[in-house]
Image (cartoon, rainbow, N blue to C red):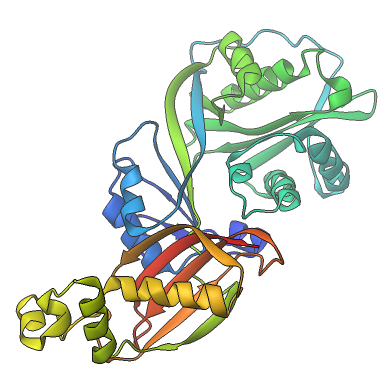
Length: 374
């Protein structure tokens, strides 16, 4: 795995039961991204790049399915020059959460974030309840880590809101990471009071800047931030790539060999008599170790498997996106695998991933296809 491009995400991996990696690139290099994803053997890559950055769609050249999951906007406040206004609700009680607050906090987060849409919701692979559990784990982590703070807000001994905050190691920048207000308490200015309280706390501890961020379409909180001394300074696009490269979700695997006779027969039938398919010397001159099979033969093998074995008769292609990373040599043995996320369903649309690997387990052919079973 290229740690300069992506790195393993243990929390996401444990939560969703998929091999998940994350990455953030100031300058987009689609080839480096694709190379790192294939090297990682990940199921899902979550990437952040500057909003409207050029080049990210280039990863599609390697048949990697790209989902634009959200646009994240960042606001900052200069705590050296801005003085927060007094709380609108002075009766609120703010205190730092401890382990004894976690059960009540889980309930509040479920109420607050059940209908909130994040970048995870853009991905059909990810279970919605596990996304919600992620917010709960995220907040709990702020209650237990030394460099983080989880504020509990109470009104009349009721849990009304919370604020999860973190800080940089240099002590200059604090971040309001996650805020939530009970639906029963909304509309009374409590969210604004959360912002003001955390501004005052960071400033009192010597932080010069405070950051907050959200999805670009979350207008309500951005209006509050603008009123409380924050200004927009950058935006990042989040992309999900469902590479599905790990061993999970296999529904079929077998060995395959495209013989020289098969290659010659296909050349005659199709008219593609390119010498690299039919003559060893021509293939060597082109830089290949031997004559290579037609790429369409790999697609034909995929079609045969889908239509006759898995899922079987009644299966038709809706779409096919295929890339060839290494040549498939005529007469040599290879291993192929077919994966269908969630397994085979009796009818309807499904997504399938197809791979052909050489004896060293190096990926040679990689394809995504939408299929319909009737």
